Image (cartoon, rainbow, N blue to C red; front, side):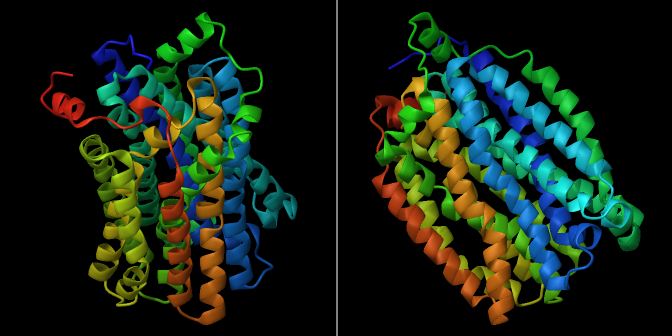
Length: 440
């Protein structure tokens, strides 16, 4: 087992930098989802019917998820050959430039069919960026950490996802309240995208100060860099297939919560869009708080046990989620979304360490990034589209709930099949107790 040579203070700084950087990237990624649900059908697909326009807008949202395994494969290849740190800088640049250009993009009324085409291209760039981000940030935090801290430190970049949602939702809510619904739909939606430029500059300053991971430096010193890491990953289907399946349910329900639910409550006239944004913020905060808690629990109970428990909770919650939304009350929506956020956070806490250490260090960036990206496509990319189609076809949410139960069955099966041959893949009780007492 490789031992980190990074000081505890430095490893904490790396994990914190990973958290800040991923927060910025997920802010960029998910403000697109909110804008797609709220205004993009009118801005970029005005000639379509309301239902067709909504599906077209959500399809452009899905393009970002399709691009994620592509970005994961490309940046994973170079991350395993050149280093983790350089790919993190590149991913943030790609994401930031793509997001700002979306904020400047003329709409359909101005440039016609070129508008939705360019929107798809820029969304694909966002997906490339975040596809390389997750693996790099997780690995840099994990590989800088001592064995007893690996699950906890690698969980912090996962917190960036819900915090990015919180930041994006707060900015969207503030802009919407400041401009009013009509102005927001016309031009105000662009402001959150343009704000990204300032956030990216801040994130780049942090990332340029980080050191390369000790494990990668050891691989390079021993000349154990793989020439084709992705090919080696694909030759191990018993690892990458269940690693990909593990994330399907959490990604699907996460994007139902963050994207589909906004349109669902608006179409059904359940609660106002502003109230739903506020519910999303609270739910994302619950999600964020649950991630490090789950990482600590995984140190005591084992990573697999915590993940399986969370997946059971999420699967069981698929029907009550929509029953509570259909009450048409803010309290019902808050309970539905907060419990979903709790379950997603519990599943996410040990997830990064669990799948990353299922792959040997020399192909770890490629393996974990591609598995995560494929799971996100099969879960998050298609979930809002499938949910919209099922809701439109049936006129209710029961079919959407059944779809989430099916996703849960796949993820549960994957969680039981995935094996990690590395001894550090599950923190021991003694290590975690040492960490909690501050002696690790």
